[in-house]
Image 1 (cartoon, rainbow, N blue to C red):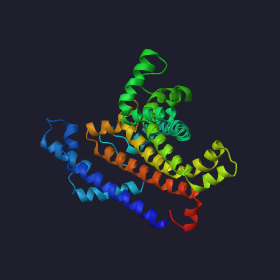
Image 2: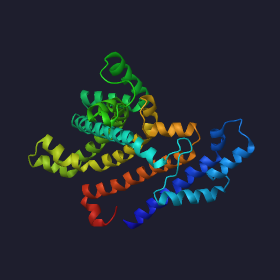
Image 3: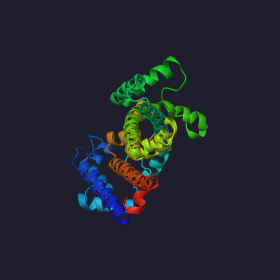
Length: 313
């Protein structure tokens, strides 16, 4: 487990270096953006010195990493507030949105995938696979626009944009997040249901399932007691990857629905050349992906005792 943890830390360090130095070579100067194109040279130099932009890139990278290690995310150039406060405020939108989306995706995909496997080769199986193929091909931002047109504009069941805020109560806040969560969840559910179907079909052909059937176990019992539990490892793998995609997908969906989350903050920071916010957010997303993959390893141990006995993760 320790080598795995060290590898994850090195991956995060490499990701932080890539993020920092890629942003370094992009055109544009945060100081020039803040002062405008008509800024005098001495004022520009003074601001660059105040922001530390006159230091070598490698020194600024080491200083940034050192501050991150102590929990200091720096101060936003644009908002003049600690980046940690911005992230904390916006995470109250993005994290519940991602959790809602992964919950909806799982709740839809696993029963649909298992049902398709149980109806293998039949018209219902073909119908489900056709719908899921459409879901795989559908971009989530386009689906979000369709959901707005149907449920917000035409039926007026949900707000078209904005966030009610948790201060208004859990129900209004969750109501504001439902359409964006569906826009994120449905394409991922289509992928996950196809993976679930394939995994269940593979386990249904195993000898232990046929033995259980030969001993008198009914088709439904053999499916849910033996096939489905043993098909969960590839499903959990996709779930771990999907959570990462959902965090990244909020960048687009939050702008479609005008949600004040981390994704919208990311685009605003890029437009304003607020490099410290962009760097912190990208590293935070990378760390989230790494931590989710690390958690998936523990789920593997719970699902497959052979990994525990073999000492592998």
